[in-house]
Image (cartoon, rainbow, N blue to C red; front, side, top):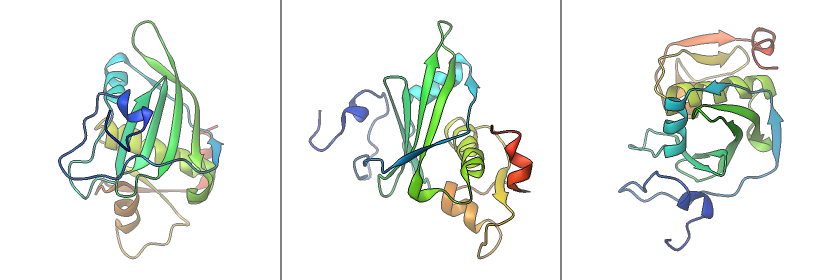
Length: 169
């Protein structure tokens, strides 16, 4: 175990990249968000391996330990999301609960769940999905908010809390 590394990092298969990253940071106060999803065995293997940024444009790093996925901002190490899984015998997994750092909630808990869904589906698992940009988000040009949050350039779809409330209960 390297000095300054947390127990979370020793439990994951993800390796430190060649460029220096801050060690994963602590999580501030967390609040539950209405995110739930199920992942097949292949997707769970990817989530368990962890995600390390390959370039400075990558905004996230993830670590998996003891049935929990931890998502941190890659450049600061700040803990943002935690997801607890129920692991199934066939290797699949279901999210039991999800929490977000209270001080980073952008619009509301439902929109935070939509952002988390995008980060997991697109950034971690590589699915080709549209970025959910909330109608209330003020940005300095097309894609600016998406790039700041996810480091991606996906097609955006404008959403409102009313539109996503049914999806994330």
